[in-house]
Amino acid sequence: MDTPFISNRILYYCEWMTKLVCLNLVWIGFTLLGGIILGIMPATASLFYVCRKWLEGKGDEPLLPAFWQHYRQEFWSSQFLIVPIIMPIGLILFNMYVLLPQTDWLLSVVFYVNIGMVFLYCCFLVFLFPLYTKYKFTAFKLIKAALIFGCAKLHYGLLLLITYTFIIGISILYSSLFFFFTFSGLALCNSYAAYFIFDRSTDV
Image (cartoon, rainbow, N blue to C red; front, side):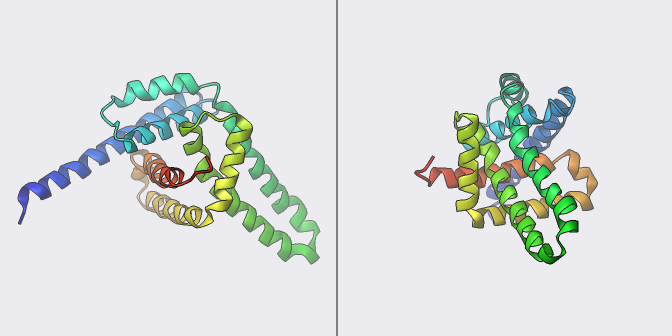
């Protein structure tokens, strides 16, 4: 049995778990620092920024200074991201609570349209923050690129949504994980898949 190899692998995974715990706590802290409403967008952008750096092999940079620097830089410029996140939710809720009760004969059509919109919206979100942290797009081009990738890579979006569901389900069963792994784990999985796709695409 190769004891040094096993020890190195255990040490490697423990190091990653520690990094994810720290990143999750830092994300929560900086979201609260901005009063949640103003803090969640720059904190999430910084979360994905750190994940990108880790995946690029630049994980030696101290976490807190890197997060804080990016958080300050993106505090105001990232606030617009709330618009493409909130608006589709409003449209979906409008369909559910206004159109559905008034269109009995179109009930099934509106219902399935709503399901399709929710799925496309989730695929759009999968690419929104990775694109924002990797490329210097204008707001319009960022939203357009996220929509294109979301529609063109539906199979990847579906796999990521299954992964999201699994991680969130585990976090619900073991609520303590919410504070230690949930958001950093989601962001790292999301970033890994998104950058894998970007590196193999010529359309960005």
